Length: 155
Image 1: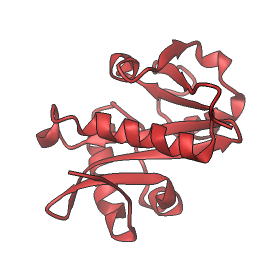
Image 2: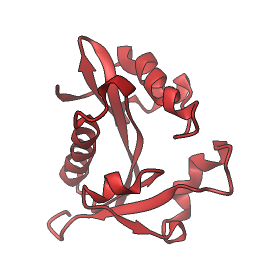
Image 3: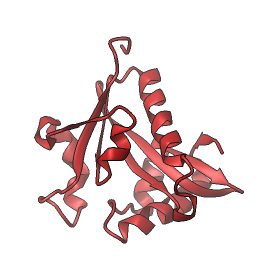
Image 4: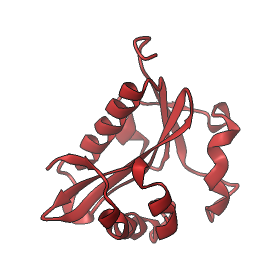
């Protein structure tokens, strides 16, 4: 299975995959309108034309991007799809010249396997909190913040 940029026809399936985890409190729910508005951020993995995994790389500023909405259908867990998506985001950030990528997650060990390191959320710029007000846990966020810094070869 390959990582591909999302297409307009993927939006409803992306929402289904993401919101299946949001319903359990594992991630922030995504409105269909938000997915359409940010579709260029999304990459997907398809199996028989069905979106089985997705992720978004959202640019926050010239030097910072966020990995958002990383979700893999439960029937596809433990197949390395999440790792493929994270590596795809890191490659895209590097190609764009973005030196730092961050995420907020309940699964820090997964991201640490990919070279991310934990940081205090307060070290991140306030701009990153733009969607947090929609979270039912706001302002008592219990997610872990992690960052990935590229070597000096990213400009």
